[in-house]
Structures are given as C-alpha cells and as structure tokens.
Image 1 (spheres, rainbow, N blue to C red):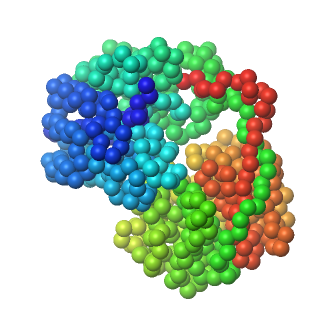
Image 2: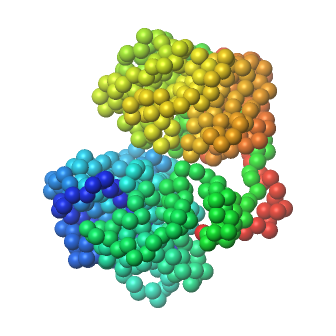
Image 3: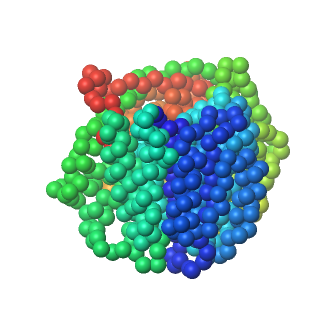
Length: 635
C-alpha cells in the first residue's frame, strides 16, 4: 500500500520579474525498470502532469516514458538547447531515485540493482548538477521542478548513505519545496487494493488545483495538503505534505491572479513557519514561537498538540557510556585534524607527519582500518575535510598551501597557493563548488574548486586565523582568530556581517550547528561557548588547558572538545553538563575529535601519534514515561 516512489518534491524558482517567454516542460515517467522493482503509478502521474501542463497551463510538453539513461540525457540535451532566456520552464520526474546524503540522483529504466555507491553516482543522474543547474544556466524566468522519487533504497550497494532517501534541495529566494509526506511519514501510492486511480494520493489531489492557472500556487498547495491528510486519515494513516517556501503568497501561473480571498497575518505566519521556517529552525521551536505571538489564535490548538507529542514531547536520549574499541595505526606524528565522511564509511585524518590519511571505518570488518595515504605537503598537515559528495578531500598545511585530492588517492588535483603563512584550516562549501582557507597570515581566502583560482580575499582579523567554516546554508563564513574574535562574513563577497564574540584570549575554533542557529567556540581560556542570538551562551568549562577544538554531534545535542593537556570531553549542548571523558592512559592531552554522522562513534587524536575510535551507547532519559508516550508524531 505504501508507494515505493514516495518522495514528492516540488521546487519552484521564480525570477523577480517574469517575462513573456515560451513555457516549456520536460516530463519523465519511469515505471517499467530492467533491474529495479517496477512502480505502479509513475507513468500515470507523468501522463496527468503532461495533460495539465500542456492543456491547462499552456506549456510545450516533451514527454518521456521509460527512457534509459542515454535516451534521457539526449532528450535533456535537446530540451536544454530549446530554452531561451526568459522562458518559463518545468521539469517533472516520477520514478526511482536515491541520495548519497548530499545530492539526489534519478534512476532511469536501465539503472543497476547492484552497484557500489561510487559507480551508482555515475550510472544515475544528479538532480542538482545534471538537471536543475543546467536549466538555471539557461536563465529561465521561472523554473518549476516536480520530482517524485523513492524514499526507500531500491539499490543493493552495501552502504548506509543510500538508505536515507532523497535529501532536501537547497532553498533559495523564490523557491517552493513540497514533500508528499512529512517527517517520518510514508506517502501513499494508493488507498487500498481496490483503489483504481491512475495517480498517487498526492498527485490526484494536486492536479485539480493546478488546472486553474490564476489560483495562487501556495493556496493550491495548502488545499492539497488538507486533502491528502484527509484521504490518508480515512485508512488510519498519517500523511500531510511538508511545505518549504520562499515564494510570494500571491504567485500564480497566469498574468492575473485571483485575489478574492484575503489571507490574514496569522495565516501568513503559519504558512511561513511551516515552510521556510521549518528549514531554518528547530521543528518544535517554530510552534513555541507561534504560540508566543498568537496564544489564542486559530492555529494555537494545532501548535499545542504538536508540542505535546513526539518529537517535541518525548524523553531525550542520553549518553550512557563511551568505550574505546579501536586504534588506527599509521601516522608517525600527532594527529591535527579529523573528519568523518557524510556516509560514515570513511574517516580522514591530518597529521604533523606531513601526510593525510583516509581510513575505512564503516564498510565491514574485512576492510576496517585500511587506509590511503595522501603525500605531497612539505609541512605538517593542519586540517582535512571531505567534499559533500565524498569524492574529494581538502587539506591545509604549514607549507602555506591547501590541496584538493581525489578521495581514491593519488597526487593533489589542485594546489591552492596565495597565503603567506601557515594555512591552518580548509573547508568545502555545502554545494562543494568552493573551498575556504584560513591562515596565520591573518587572511581568509575563497577558491573555486573547478579551476583552483582564488575568488576573493577576506581581511580584518589582527591575528592568525585558526579555523574557518561555511554555514550549513552556505551563505555565511565563520572564522576564529588569535585576536580573540569570532566573526561572521558574507560568503558571496567576503564582507563582515557581525562579530560573534571578542575576548582577550585567542579563539581556537568555531563552527555552526546544522540550523545555523548556534555558534560553538573553542577558546584558549579552557572553555567552550555555545552562542545563540536570543540569550547568554551555554558555557562548557572544566578543561585544564587551552582548547584545540569543539564539535557538535548527535543532532547538535552533544559537543566533544579537545584540550592541550587534558582528555577529550563530551558535553550536553543544552545544559553544559560534562558527560564523559575520552583519554588514553598513555597520552597526556588530545589534539582533535570528530563525531560520526550518526554520533555513535567518536574519533580522537591523542597527543603523540595515536588515533582512537570510541563507541557511544545511548538510552532514554525516562524510559518508564516513554512506554506510555505515543509512538507517532502528530502531523
């Protein structure tokens, strides 16, 4: 009953001023797969969209049914060639898909069932890079993408990352994103064995609302959400499409939009926090803020109900124990930087022995601990980080360079030269197209990954810059410096946005949480601080020496810190309570630490050349109360 092709993504990118260009749509449906499980409703969904976009909305439609990868790419190439600047463009796909945790991929008719994740990336089609970016490059006045792909993993790869389903597309101004189901919900393909509709539950609800081009799009989507929830409830199933939007409430596909209904401010705020705000803040915080503003409003009861049910009102998982389980041997000098790959399969380490290493840590016992050595730097390697797609790593070094390497090994593919002092840190942008570097020369530099050329330089710190990171949305850059300041910069042009803190002690490291709502700072005064925009910082204190690093983990609920002459420590990020110490009895001090993506492991660089892996075990804070709590969140 649950459809395999269940993730429904609508992304509308609208220019500030639409032109009278041609309307063009490429609509693809894949249901009869050579190797993957067949899908029942995808071809019907594609037929329905072709009818509506062609007959009702006036698009020139190119319709593909069950194309192979080459056939699709050739059709896409022809479609791209037809686009003129100012056209209104739609891309619609219904079929299998998968995610590596950083990008979404479309599976065509000949997609393989068994493949490594690396090979699968090249035998399926990247939604962001091969499709949407190529369309945007043609400068359409409007781009609407509807992608109905698979939330369950149809592939046999032996990896974890492809089991997480499709990831959210980046939201930019003028963007509307709609999922067919909310978090932890499954989208229905049909309502039962006797349901003979040619469309999925979401598509049959959406299509009638799209037929009238003068209806504001957000109004049509909101009506669809209510209908889907009601249909799902009729068979005791929870499904309510999730909306992420930065599109005007009045936008429609016609030259003149219907304005009969006036939307009051509370409703506008509710639509906003249910869309763009959902991405930018904690799911429970948004309901609390709405209640603060409208305690007796029309949505107050819904907000209170959501706050009183999981995931908002459920016992927290707490750390029960931390146990050493492995040493990774190979470096001959101190480990200065660590980073887990997004899938958790690999761990990268940077060392004072002038090398970086990539370790296999999540692909089974036969491969565990195998490493690839990256040689070429002529000074200690000070940091290492993965690209979002795991295909590259970037390193920084005291030889005044940063280098980009293929994760499979070999010589550096790009050497980034320009700093006049030790390069202390290097990080990829969230989309992987740029690298930012920090240096003891006091500057921060942004580089183009494709060419290795410098994009611009950021100056303003009066001391060595110890760390630099992109924010999760990619619009800000965070720096920490020996001058005692932590600063936030505009990532597009390098202008200073604000100073997070300014102290007399050097700031060793700073990073943002996943929502860009908090900034974590490691300081030479032996403390770490978690800054929020709406209050005093949470202070993590107890170390006996200057801190080297402080890193978020466990959905940003934990922090691990390392210090000059002390054990690594794990902290509760909410309360500041110290939960565990991680220390080798033969080592004094820790240099760096990193959580695995699922926060069940911590890698710690001990003083000397020891790299240790620790396993974390969690349990419910109040298991007796949890036994009586509802197991499903209220939509």
